[in-house]
Image 1 (cartoon, rainbow over the protein chains, first blue to last red):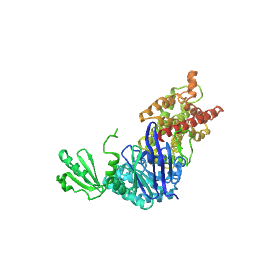
Image 2 (spheres, each protein chain N blue to C red):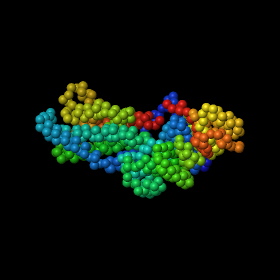
Image 3 (cartoon, rainbow over the protein chains, first blue to last red):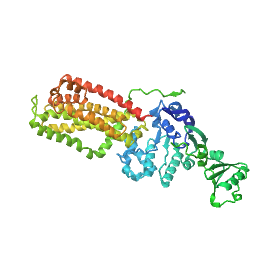
Image 4 (cartoon, rainbow over the protein chains, first blue to last red):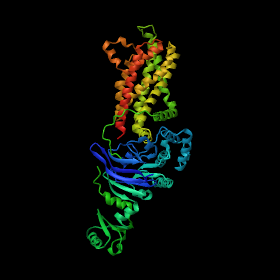
Amino acid sequence: MEPSIITANDLVKRYGDCTAVDGISFSVARGECFGILGPNGAGKTTTIRMISCLSPVTSGELSVDGMQAHLKERRIKSILGVVPQEDNLDPDLSVRQNLRAYSRYFNMPADVAAERIDEVLELMQLSAKGKDRIDELSGGLKRRLTIARGLINQPKILVLDEPTTGLDPQARHLVWQKLRLLRQQGVTILLTTHYMEEASHLCDRVVILNKGKVIAEGDPKGMIARYAGRDVVEIQAEGEERAAVLRRVEAIDGVTVEEVADLLYVYVRGGNGFDVSALNLDEERIVQRRANLEDVFLMLTGRGLEDDE
Amino acid sequence: MSVQTASMPRIDLPTLSPLAFRVWQRNRDVYLNIWRAEVVWPLVDPLITLIALGIGLGDFVELPVEQSYIQFIAPGLLAAFPMWMAAGETGWGSFFRMENHRTFDAIMATPATIDDVVTGEILWASTRACISVVYILVLAVAFGAVDSVLAVFVLPIAFLPGLMFGSISLCWTSMARSISQLNYFFAAFITPQFWLSGVFFPLSELPGWVQVVAWFTPAKHAVDVYRGLVAGDMEVGHLGDIAWMVVVTAIFYCIAVFAMRKRLVK
C-alpha cells in the first residue's frame, strides 16, 4: 500500500478566465491530519471539492486511495466522509432520519445503518437528540451532526471544509476533541481552515495556499521555527521612539522586524534573544509571546487587505 | 499515469443507477413525515371541481356525445391535477431542495451523482402524480363517472405522464435563477394546458389550427388516453399518444440531466 492516501500533482482548476487553483502539488499520508490553510479566495474549498469528486479537475493529476479522481467518482466518494462548510442537513427530516437517508446512499442495509447511527450519535454526543428536528438544533449541534453524517460510512478520509467557522469556543473545542479522537482511531483527516489556532491544534502537516498556489508546506512547529522563529515581541511605537527601536533591532543578530501600521513585530529566531527592557518603553506597549502559526500565515499571505474585492 | 484534461464539455448520456431509488426514498420519508399537510390540496381540489363543474355547471352543458358532463371531465381531471402535482414537485419542490436546503449538494457528496438526483426527483414527482390519480379515480367512481373496468389501467399508465411532467418541469427548474422565475413556467405552460387540453370541453369544438397546436401539448395526449380507458373505448391512436409521451419524456429527461450537471457540477 502506498503511504500517501491523497496525491495531487500540478492540479489546476479554472472557471472560465478565473484560475481558482493554479498548479498545486501535495500529498497526504495515511492516518495524518492535513490542513489546507489560506485566506478567503485562496482556493481551499475548490481543492477539497476536487478531492471529493464534486468538481471536475481542469488539469493535473489527482489520486485518492490509489484511484484517479476523474475515473472512479463513485468509488472514491464511497470512502470519503464530506463535511461541507455550509450546513446542508435536511430540515424536512429528523436527526436520525437525516442519518438514515444518508446511509442509504452508501447502500447500507437498515439493520447495519441503525447500529452505525447509534455509534455516530454516541461519538458526537448527540444520542439524546435522535428525534429532534434540525431547526431545533444550535449551530454547534448542527455541526456535530454534520460530522456524524460524514462518519456514517466509516470513511477512510474525513474531509472538512472550515469545520468550526461560526461556532462558539465551547462548541469549537468539542469539535477539536472529537477530531483528535478520530485521528487516534486512524481516520485520515483533511481540513481547510483560516483559524491558525485550529491548524496548530489538529494538523500534523499543513499547506498554505495563496491565490491558488502553494506558498509553504510543512509541520506547524517546523514552519513556525523556519519563518517566524521562537519568540515575537510586538511593540507599539511611533516617531522618534520607533526609529530608536528599529536602530537597536537592526544591530542584533537573528532578529528581524516587520512594520505594520503603528506596530512593530520583532521576530526572534535565536541567538541571545532581544532584551526589551533596554528599550525604555512603557510595558503596556510591549507584548512578548511565543511565535505561532498565525505569524507565519500573516508573514506569507500578507497583512493587507489588498486582495479583498 | 495519464494527465487528465477535462475541458471537453460533458456529453455523456444520463447514467441510471439504483441510487436514484435512494433519492426517491428520501422524498418518500419526507412525505410520510408531513403527509397530513400534503393530503388536503390534491384531494379537495378535484372534489370541488367535480362538484362545481361536473354537477353544478354540468346541468347547463349539452355535449355532442351521449355523456353527462361529469363523465366527460372526470378522465380529463385524471390528467390535469396530477400534471400539477408532478410539475409542482420538480418545480417548487426541487428548487427548494436544491437552492434553499442544499439537499442536492449533500446527496452529491455521497456515491450518488447528479444523474441519480435528477432521476430520483422525477421518479418521486411521478409518484406524487400517481397518488393524486388514485384520489381522483376513487372520487370519479364515487360520482358514478367511470364507465369501464379498463379504468384500473389508468394507474399503471399514470406513471408515464408523471415522468413526463416531472422531467419537463425539472428542465425549467434547472435553469431558473429564483423561485419567482418558476412562476413563468406555471403561468405560461401548466395553467394553459390545464384549461385548454380538452379537459373541460372537446377540442373538436375549436378551430383546426388550435387542434394542431394542441397536438404539441403533453397534457392532450394524457387526456386522450384516459378518456379511452375510462369510457372503455380504446383505439390504436392511443398507442400513438403513449409513444408521443415516451419520446417527450426521454428528451426532457436527458435535457434535465445535462442542465443540472451544468448547474451543479462546476
